[in-house]
Every structure is written in structure tokens, then in C-alpha cells.
Image 1 (cartoon, helix red, strand yellow):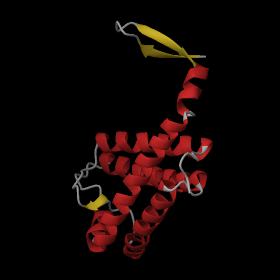
Image 2 (cartoon, helix red, strand yellow; image 1 turned 90 degrees about the horizontal axis):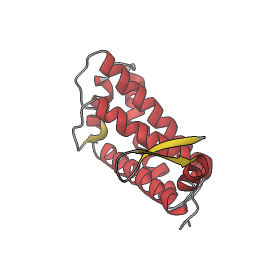
Image 3 (tube, helix red, strand yellow; image 1 turned 135 degrees about the horizontal axis):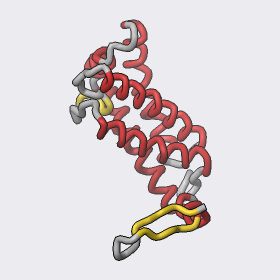
Image 4 (tube, helix red, strand yellow; image 1 turned 90 degrees about the vertical axis):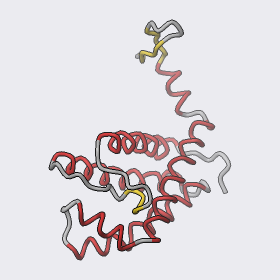
Length: 163
């Protein structure tokens, strides 16, 4: 099976599937995916830990959960994000932590999509109150890319420069 790719002159080229497998199993690409995913979750976790009330309000704005679950989520999710991000950064239990992060991203992405479909114009709360990102297609696209990184890491592992 072949995957199309633009050539130097803009005309479509084809790369064999084996080359695609080599690309996503390259230790440096896997390491880069691991670093990006871990730093995103470390930063997100820290920002939410700093302002649990702001994060609680962000969760509430989605209008998907009852208040007791919102409070519990606002307290626990940032710590899960921080610890899984740190463990992933240091290459500890990469497959497991990538799977946890991917599951979280799927849930977050579904919440964003539901909010878009409901016409809500709210701060996504992805990085606490630090960046003030709004829900939208750009956020869905970012999350899908991170989900793909997580899926690759959960499947292939990345033990390059691990502790």
C-alpha cells in the first residue's frame, strides 16, 4: 500500500508503507513525540494546579457535568496530567502513560466537539486560564495531532534517553 506525498515539483509522489513505518518508528521522531506530548501535559497540569478555581469554572462552562464531579475533576485531573507528563518525559512506562494521556485527550476532544456543536463560545480550559484558548476547530485539530502522537507512543514505545 502506498501513501501520496507531494514531490519537489508539487506533483504527487508515493512513499511505500514500509517507509511510513520506518518514519514513525524512528527513535528520534518517537523521542520528539514523547517530549512534545509530555511538555504539553506538564504545562497544562501546572497551570491548572495553580488555579483550581479557574479550571473548575472552565469545566463548568462546558455544561456537561454535575458540580460534584466538576470539583473532583478540577482537583484530580491536573495532578494526573502533571504526573503522566513527567513520567512520559523521563521515559518511564511510556506505553502506559501515553495510553492514559491519549484517553484524556479523547475525552477532552469530545467535550470540545460537543461544545462547538452546541454553539458555545468558551475558553477550553486546556491550559487552565493561562492561554485563554477558545473551543473551535483549531483546538480539535491540535488535540487530534496529540492523540496521534499518543497512539503511536502507546503502540511502539520510546525508550530513547529514558531513565
